[in-house]
Amino acid sequence: MSRPTFDLRITPWASVRWRNPGEKSESLEQADKLSLEDLLIKAHEIEALLFGPPPALSGLLRLLYALTARVTGLDEAPDDFEWYDRRADILENGIDADDVRKYFDRFPGRFDLFSERPFLQDPRLAEESPKRPGVNKLVIGRPAGNNAVWFGHHWDSSPVPVDSAEAFAHLLMWLYYGPSGRCATRTHGAESKADVSAGPLRSSLSYHPEGRSLLETLLAGLTLPDEHVSRENDLCPWETDELHDPTEPARAPSGPCSQLTGGWQHALLLFPDDTGDHVVDACITWGRRHKAPSMNDPYVIHQTSKQGNVYARPADAGRALWRDLDGLLLLDRTGSTTVQRPDVFKYTDELGLFHIQALGFEQDGKTKDVQFVSSRTPQPVRQIRDDDPNTARATGDLRSAGEMYGQRVEYAVKVAWAGALDKKTGPCAWQEEAAALYWPQAEDLFWERLAKEDFTEAWRDFLRLAHETFSTVTDGYVKGPRAARAIERARLELYGGRRKKPSTSS
Image (cartoon, rainbow, N blue to C red):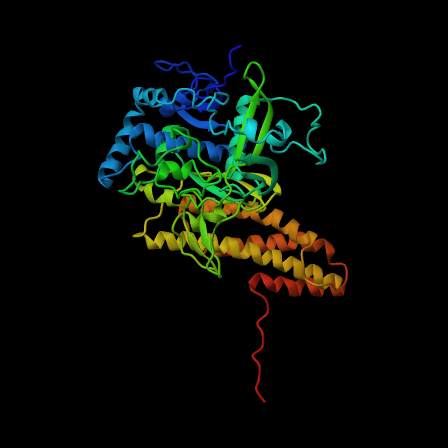
């Protein structure tokens, strides 16, 4: 019998949105789905990818960045000016189809999910980890094991097969965002363990420049390699002759390609049905015994805590993208943390205006998954240069004003609630209602002002919005002198609270 196959190189699996729907390409009709090879060749005709949950798209973009760099020669930069010139030439003329095909020809079967060397998987798990958690464990969101059934009725005794393209999306999420802790037992040599470290992007939020075409998006997502980087040693996992030894410490990435496609802690193996169109079983276990070195991911905002620890700004489904612009556009920065914008935005100035797309997964650092996170700036955002401090300051002040009055109104309603009920100040229903009212309107106000570049006394509009929010939340509860007094005293918090009287010395 022939081996089941699902070769990402040639099998249409990625949904796309075309720039000019209905037009015929020279060599390809506008299909609903494309193969990996056609994604690169036709990138200039594609507007955007329509793939998987946000964390899966985040992982796929990193793979496409690495492939784009490799097939275009932008994976090396012996001369900075030459690299920028070459990128500009590719932006104008597109990615050479012959270069794409020659690259894939070098690795036959390496992009097949079910080959002897399956893409992004470890075939050794078939023998080293015979206990398989199953397809329900693979599909994030399905109940598995003893977990309760919430959003879908799935049982381990009769698992429902998953489409191979969807299984690939979940494979990416496990590699980049997988949990730490208990996993299936794997025995490699003398090492037999059943625990794993978290994936390199767990709980983080990625920020990607998004252009008018997929080609612009992919080129804007590339970073300038250091002079010492060589494609002979900066390898992606599918380019290596041998599988890595999972018991040996991982090497630090030597360049952008190994940086984008490394650092994974998990190992997976998918098992297909007879056709290869569906995955019916899966093995998920540890892929490295040692935690990989930091990848210094170029798409996350890095912050430094008061203790000096560097960490990626975490994903928060309740936090709108405009509130993160301090870490993206070189705005004036204040607060208790030092913010470093994603490295990728250092290389987009010459390419023009871009939307910013945020993709991630709100999670804790270990095992709890909360919610997928996805947002996009409603208008293209101009990168603010270091030599344009006035615009940076004005935009930063606009963002800071919106942030400040949002925090003040949330605190003010908590104080009002506590005073009216004679309780301690703390989280309450009024705070949730105030947040639901204020933040969406503040976001609209911010983008409206930014589009007009109107920064004149912008704080007044946010203060007005905070007042309206406070009144909407509290007015219905003024039913006695005590409540009225507590609410009006709390309203002062919109201005920063009462000034404390200076202490008098005896």
